[in-house]
Length: 313
Image (cartoon, rainbow, N blue to C red; front, side, top):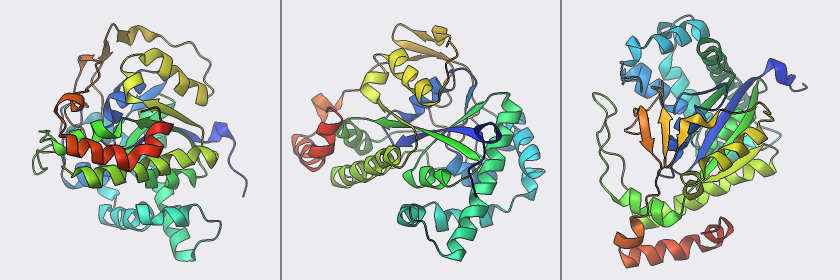
């Protein structure tokens, strides 16, 4: 079967990369690009929104957010029609790191292929509804997970582009070592997960290698270094428009001197930054340079050296 013509496909800009690398801030800025709509981490919609009724970034509980209720009605005839447990079983089958080797093979088992086809169909219906309700043309999904990007690569009705967000691994490791409070709704832990430097360094390597490989597999990709994005946002956001083949002029008025102006969004899995509105400062968080324990810094530096150098760190 031949891929659908671009006009018949839904455009998705997938923000991939390691958590704590500035992906949420990137999502807020990408939402301001012409005809883009940032909706947060769609992978977690089924658990955070449908099971827990966690707040949307607009401040309303998911069940009270008119945007998402309109999306559910258009995509599935209402969220009450969705079998959440079944979708989560599909996720555990096809949208996990262990499934990536299968996702790049030409031949797959009939059972896996059936689950993949069903899961991508569910996502495609959701993205189409988001486009229709928002009145925009490009859905910005900042789920970050490599496996979901590989899944979307297999969706015939999705025109996939990737914004690969990277950050110095020592900054990522330091961020994962800290206690970070976050409000994600009743029943959801109010602290972001912590991780030891060794585990973070290994994960930084595997996640970025997997996302980086998508470009070699034919998925148009723009690599965005967090440190560059907060200092020269217009220059680096322009590279995203280039991989999307969008020549329309962009109004960069939302970018100021060391700040970005953002409206309320309807992001899923919204943390502190996702729920921000008004003026959000753009500044590098380099606290790790002064306060990261020397032993942790040496460990992360050694483990990540080849790829870190490739990214210019």
